[in-house]
Image (cartoon, rainbow, N blue to C red; front, top):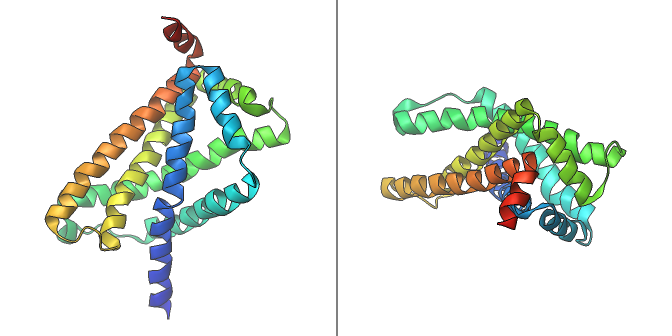
Length: 218
């Protein structure tokens, strides 16, 4: 019974990491990417998201609860897991270790990011709406220490997702042989690079909106 429960929890943990959490990560990065087109473009995009019907229900069921479960059970896995060089080889064992490390970093980053943005907006500590959010992110990322923290958090979250895709494909029987798993490694690396680039561009756009405005005028 315990083994069956553990198997189910691992499968659910893996599935939630890809759907819906992975989907939310991509949408979130894409929304933030509009900051590279200026504050007005970002406000328009955020406004579209905020006007979705039943938004609080969607966020609770498909974002908050999955992240909470994935994060808590992921901590259990991280502290119970043992690296296995003989089964996976040196490179994959390093990726296995990084998956655990970035998972912990990502959980800390998400908790702080939510507190610093959504919670503060809900408490009325900062101006609400997309315009307030843009200014809030600018205030946060104007601090070099916080910018570095956000860069680390972003890269950790994207790596955790991209490498998690590789593990998901293996554990769910999608990539069975060595060749398929090698191709999957290359694909997930490309995903990591593209999503990281999108996220980093957004961070620097929030941190330096004047540079973005100047670039748009050219």
